[in-house]
Image 1 (cartoon, protein in one colour):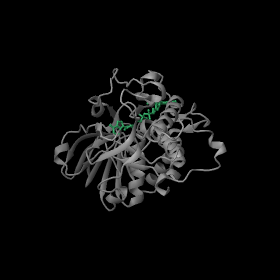
Image 2 (image 1 turned 120 degrees about the vertical axis):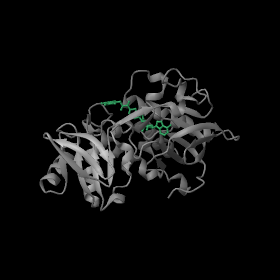
Image 3 (image 1 turned 60 degrees about the vertical axis):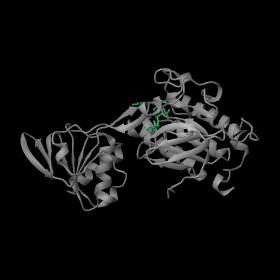
Image 4 (image 1 turned 135 degrees about the vertical axis):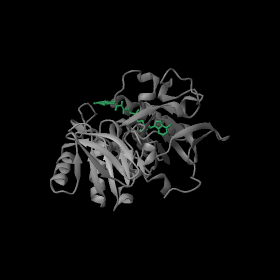
Length: 335
Ligand SMILES: Cc1cc2nc3c(=O)[nH]c(=O)nc-3n(C[C@H](O)[C@H](O)[C@H](O)COP(=O)(O)OP(=O)(O)OC[C@H]3O[C@@H](n4cnc5c(N)ncnc54)[C@H](O)[C@@H]3O)c2cc1C
C-alpha cells in the first residue's frame, strides 16, 4: 500500500530497468532501505518495453534467457529485500533536502533519500501517442493496462502487434472481457507460449482476432476496420492501443548533472557531480555506446556499494562475498 507521505529511504533508484533493479538489490543486500521509481506500469526497462519476447545470449550466467525471464529473475532476487517499487511515476525534479540527502519529485509525490541512483537508461519509456482518426470521439482510449480485472465484462478492442498487445489480449480474456485483437500485419509478437495461447483462445472462440486489418477511424462506440476488403464495425467500450514505447529523457534534462548529450558523466563508482547521486547503466557516460546488460550490472553493483558507504559511513564500500554470508540480510524494514 502506498502511503500519502512516503518515508525517507536510504537509497532512491530512478528507473526500474535491469540496472535499477540490480542496484536496488545490491543496496538492499547491504542492509539499506530502497525505493525504486519507474515511469512504466511494470519494471524491466527496455527488456520489458522493447523486447520481452527476445532471447538474450550474453547475460552473465544465464545462457539463452528470454528478456522477460531475466527481468523475472531480477525481481525474484530483489523480492526478499522488500524494496518499495513504485510504478507509473516519472521523476521530474531533484533538489537537496538540507540534511545531505535529496528530494525527488514526481507527478504524484516527493521522495527523500540519503542517496540517489540514476538508472534511467535512454529515458522514461512512455507509450507512443495514439494517432488514429476519430480518437477524440471515443470516451475510453488507453495506452497501458495496469489492471486487466478493471475491464472485466467490457468490450475491449486491443490494437497492436507488439508483445504487450498479445499479453494484454490474453490477460483481458482471462479477466472476463470480450476482446477483439487487431493489427495491421497478420502476425503478433510474443514468446512461443503466449502465441500458442493466443491461437488456442482464438480457435475456441474466446478471443476475436482481426488481422491483417486497417483501422480507418474510431467512433464513439468502437472502430471501423477493413478486413479482407470488407468494412467491419467493432463495438468497444474501451480501446487499448499498444504501439510500443519511446524514451523521453526530458524530465531529467533540467537536473544539474553536467549532461553530455544523452549521457551523465560519472566518476569512480558512478559518482556524478552531485554528492550522493550516482549514475548507472545506459545513462552513464563511462559506458558510452557500449550499451550492455553485463556492463549495467557491474556499474549497478559499484554504485550501490558506494551509496551504502555514503549514507552509512560505518559500512565499507566493498561488500565482501555474498557466498560467505549464508543468506539474505533482514530487510531494512525489519531491522
Ligand atoms: C532490442 C534490444 C535488444 C537488446 N539486446 C541486448 C542483449 O542481447 N544483450 C545486452 O547486453 N543488451 C541488450 N540490449 C541493451 C540493454 O537492454 C540495455 O543496455 C539495458 O536495458 C540498459 O539498462 P538500464 O537499466 O540502464 O536502462 P533501461 O533498460 O532503459 O531502463 C531504464 C528505466 O528507467 C525508466 N525511467 C527513465 N526515466 C525515468 C524517470 N524520469 N522517472 C521514472 N522512471 C524513468 C524507464 O522507463 C526504464 O524503464 C538490447 C536493447 C534493445 C533495445
